[in-house]
Image (cartoon, rainbow, N blue to C red; front, side, top):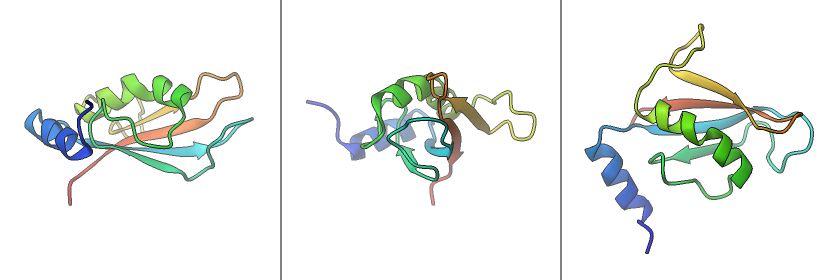
Length: 101
């Protein structure tokens, strides 16, 4: 039986991981998602409902890095990753940590 969302949140807090927001910032070509759509990872291994599997696999490594506070290569903001979906006309996603409120 998979963990509940609440259990994933507990595990993330215990390991010092931060929640991560993934947002579609540019749609290029065919994609089931629309610009501005946002998905929340409460733990890197807890895939948000509604996120297509191909995008989730492409983003997975970077969601893990972002959650663990590993800086990105983005010169304007090392707290944000910008990643393309693997399609030759893929979408552009922004991955960033969010703070608990």
